[in-house]
Amino acid sequence: MKTKTFRLSSLALSLALIAACASKPPEPTYPNPNPDLARRTEPRVPAKPQAPAPKPASQNGVGGYSAPFVSGDYAGYPAVDRFIERMALQHGFSREYMNGLFSRAQRKQWTLEYMNREAPTVKPRPGAWSRYRAKFLTEQHIARGAAFWSRHAKTLRRATERFGVPGEYVMGIMGVETIYGANVGKDQVFDALTTLAFDYPRRAEYFTEELEHFLLMTRDERIDPLVPRGSFAGAMGLGQFMPSSFRRWAVDFDGDGRRDLWQPEDAIGSIANYFAEHGWREGERVVSPALATGPEARLPESGFDTGYSLSALAEYGIRPAGNYRGSADSVRLLRLSTNDGEEYWLGHPNFYVITRYNHSTHYAMAVHELAQAVKDRYRSMFSASND
Image (tube, rainbow, N blue to C red; front, side, top):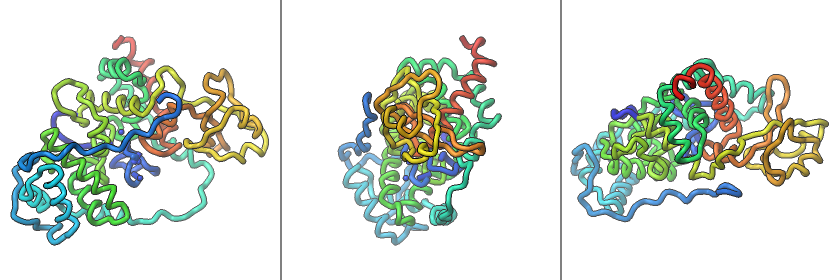
């Protein structure tokens, strides 16, 4: 999970379950880490967003909703009644306001059917990385990214100066998540979160927390809860933040007094802030290519959550390729299945930071490669006119 109208478009991973967004990439996505699909030496795990202290029992949200009891799709739901009571006691919403709001909620049956659909248990096929990569390293993604960068070059430079995160990685996230705002999602976020909180038992606790954060977010930002639209799982804006990520890491980067992740400046600043808060190391690489020789290279476990010294990998015939600049003590072994065989990479701490947005090696590699492709296109076509 920025114009001043809320086309609520997933930064927060997610289980960082869902991806990007309404287009649903094949692997989890969102800075949450996405539900279905959301430091310097070792990336720290940020504390879970904390709800503010209870507020007086008169601070309702926007919209003027009011009813003596809940009617409609969620009438007679004990869990909804308990949630309303908790929001009243802990956060000061009036019960009448919450009754009126939930009377407007609509159950999204297609969302439940999608979430309940079990993925077939099949053996992974060769070339999985090639297929995943092809979804995001497209001419559309690259050209739109370069054009977006040209329009918002000053904001991207300012984000880099403030947070230490290169503009291309902000672009990589936006490109994978929403194609720079072209696909922010069409679902009403309140309906999506209400449906998953009260009709999807497997993830009810997670989505109930996100619904709580959403209602607090809309009250804080003075947004009618029925206005924002986003992904089918509640991710929002150009970077697809879930509500808990919004409340913790979104920033008002254009200085207008509100955080609006459907507006490019706030989205750029918020994604950069998300990376910085998760331990981005300014000036360091994300990945380095590696060479693998011999059958032993298949033996060590690979993935964004592994850790090896270069000497340990050398015992398996895996070594850095070319001019290596990185730690010799701790790298992550990345083994990617392509149509032409297997690629080997060494992931550095900044690679791990990208996976905090979505806990997926493929996702982070797609962000990295799209970032580099967009930067190259921007430099070749636009940078002279913006410098």
